[in-house]
Length: 62
Image (cartoon, rainbow, N blue to C red):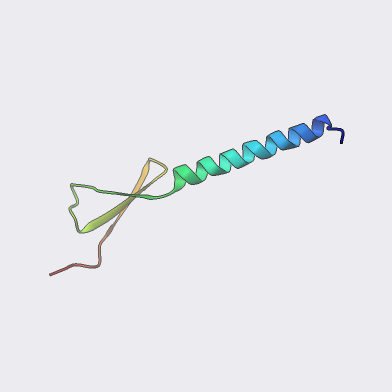
């Protein structure tokens, strides 16, 4: 099988797209964080190392 320049370019482009998708998925996965100023009644998640969202926990043990 004779490889052409276009085939090498397509393989390189496919590899770059797969690596970019994997990186985006690894960085974009929300992770639970603890915000000490809010207390234990709040659950916070951080996405893409910048965006932090918090929600009040609905399950309270009294």
